[in-house]
Amino acid sequence: MFAFAAVLLGVVNALGTLCLYKGFEVGRVSIVSPIGSTAPVVAIILAVTILGETVTGQRLVGICCVIVGIILVSLQSEQKGSAGHAAKGTFYALAFMVFSGLLLFGLKPVAVVLGVFVPVLVIRWVGSALLVVPFLRRGRTDRRVGALRLIIAVAFFDTFANVVYTLGVTLGTVTIVSTLGGMFSSVTVLLAWLFLGERLTRHHVAGFIAILVGVATLAFFG
Image (tube, rainbow, N blue to C red; front, side):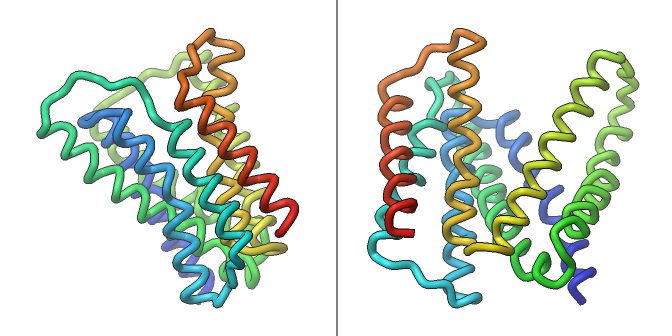
């Protein structure tokens, strides 16, 4: 049963990934990214209602601060586009939010039974099998060594992050770990500022401050 659940999580992960990038393709990053970053909210709701996890008032304040900060950091400069494209992007962003929230939640009960590594491996295998289909249908044959090395490096770090997250939810609660895990977008923005020279806007700074306040609250009252 739990092995089948791991396979379903692999399908959910693949569908979420496709929705996210499709949203970027047809919509606006300024809309898709903030909506997608609220995926921990879905995981928290499921954890509270199904797993019976409790959220104290202090934890709720910390979680809200972190999520608001993540949304602010994820906001991008407005891009030109039609209202129709914006609507399409919103649909795919909401779909990604649901799929990603299900994944963040579902890893907890599956990993408790199957361990930390098996669910991640199954999700990776299933996701690779599903995502390679649209790649082959488009007939892309780009096999440059540089691109392959970059893909392998990204895949390694992404898989490592999934293992660490899965370990986190087995030892802790989905409400806290999924909230803190959602801060990856903040790290991306910070690295872009440090190494790519991208400008930090006021809402980015406000987002980082909110995240710091939220993390400090969770650390003190968690």
